[in-house]
Structures are given as structure tokens and as C-alpha cells.
Image (tube, rainbow, N blue to C red; front, side, top):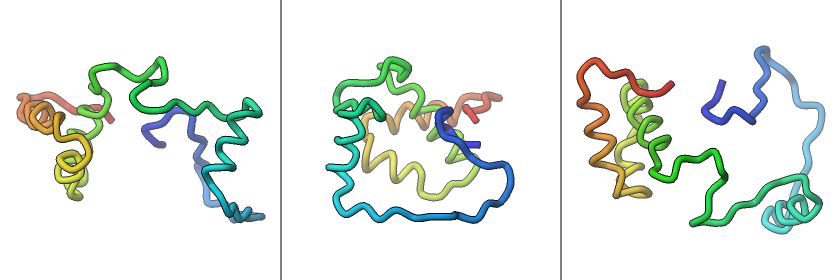
Amino acid sequence: MTGWEEEVVSPVKVVPTAETAIADVSAHLLRLAREGLLLVVYHPYRIDDIPPDDEDLVEKAASWVKAFDLGVLETVRAYHPGLVDRVLRRLARPGGEAFR
């Protein structure tokens, strides 16, 4: 299970049957987008299901800090400094379980 519901994850171990080397990932992804096989949304625009207030990131970061504490807060500070205070408030919320 992942935090991205469109991702497909096998519940059992599988062995890859093939591998495709892609020399220019950007060109490949843009070609898939032109073919209608991939949706590319450029910052600052968002896919419709992503909250405009970044609450999904706050919930996920708080959950990951509680579960893993693998430098998650430092990563939030580096890439989303404006969310650090909200993550800390979420972590301080009494009895509140973060999103999983």
C-alpha cells in the first residue's frame, strides 16, 4: 500500500520479466503525455484532487514523523519550509492520529 491510490503494488513478491532502459526520461514522459497516456501538471498548477492548502502533505509528513522519524521533518524544512509549523502543530495535537 502506498499514499498514491493510482499506484499498483503486488501483494506478493514478483520477479521482473523485463526492463526498459530510457535514455531521456523527460522526452519519454512528454511523449506519453502527448499520446494521452500520462497527465503532466506543471507547478504551480495542481491535479484536481490535491488540496490547495497542502493539507495532504501536512498529514502525510506528520504520519511519517510519528512512524519512521527518518529525517522527515528536515526534508519538509528543506522542500516545504512554509509547512513546518503546520506539521509541528499537527504532531502536537492531543490524541490526534495522522493520516495513514
